[in-house]
Image (cartoon, rainbow, N blue to C red):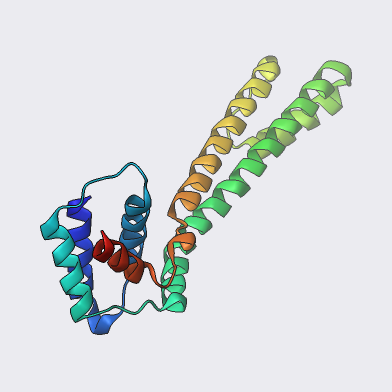
Length: 183
């Protein structure tokens, strides 16, 4: 925690014209959470003094709207990747459902309907399908569906992990200052 206090003090000193960047705000929010933790973490005197001096010399201003714009710029490619993964998962689920329909057609329909359904499945699948192994393609498309859903879940978790909008709060640096000063 003492290193984080010193890092936040350095952030205040390095802040251009007293404005805080998103990473600096997130660090300060995390520090405030640590200071509010009732487990009684010890704060080193030198770390506290470094922060108090930096804040007294240059109290930073938090431009909430600018930080939210910065956050949105960071989230945009992650959201685009998540949407791509969502469409891939939906396409894989659709392919799996179609493979189940073709399997049912293969078992219960005539030769022409079977060939037509197999041809359409081959076109949609994008990989070679053998007519005597049609049941295996239901399993293969199920695996493809699960893999696509796993990629979507990972992309979704990346967006959730990167969304730190709740940490953009004015007064975070002042609250840290007050807590360190009154300890």
